[in-house]
Length: 419
Image (tube, rainbow, N blue to C red):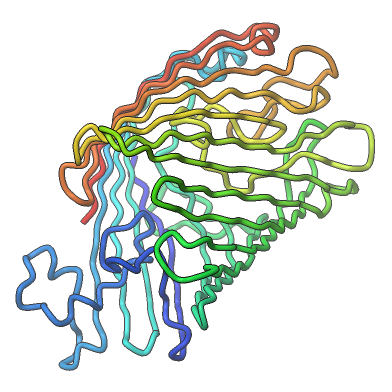
């Protein structure tokens, strides 16, 4: 099956203060990044004659002055997964599976020195799977208008869009009329220099015609306000975030909170290890019969938020994850850890993908869900190319066992190439 769709079309019109710039690109703005629209290859203009064949695709001048140029890029991913007990076998219809998928991304970035820009990215994906359960190989896409500005040390972003409904044909996807997503954030470093503390204030609005929680199904109009602080020092790095959500779920008021953090220590020893602790708190609904929904929604979560295994949908969870990352050689990195997960409210469900209750809240029973123990290796033979292998073991905690569940094993291998 081949799917090809519009991933993102962004028009950015600006005066001098409204060029698309990002702090992540400060060292090498043309380096390959996770979000390709963050790349800015204007720095290749002065050495175009010395570029190799592939590098020339990164900067194609369209006029004699070089003030208008085109950047072309591509990505390829091959990924295979094995999962022997989906949802801890709590839903018997979901059998073990092996999935094999490929994904190709092509993008073109038309830019001008004055700040006007058009960015287009297309995706094609194939997928073969042996199971009764689909394994996603398509990125979440949004038809979105995105405006970014940097002025006097402040970075500001505003956006509005809708998730894309994937269709089977080519170029037939469209925005989901039942959902909208908009927001803005402002960020500023407290002082100049690498690793300086940065404060990030954000607001997001997400309206859905239909959402599913333990207490039922209804329209969900949710607003999220939050604060994030991050920074680094020679031996430490940290990222801390706190959010509050309000709005309405049907006729019920929403009031929910979320906290997340990651703190790492870098001892000066062989292997340049990063010894870290990550944690997350996503509130649950303590009383399903009152007029307040307390379930925190992570909006569009990374389903590998806890580990590479897409097991849990964050909500009504408290987790703590000690982990260590070691550089065995410059291109090889190993990471190991264990994420210990508890539910917060016994009156609220434990959720699974794609955000539906897996174990209902009865008001009784254990709060210990599982420990996800993992080992992951990443080999980067060249910039933009990565080979990854990952193993996750999910133990059956007392709550899982009491519901009739079993432990699981998850294996993943992927090859990513970015040009």
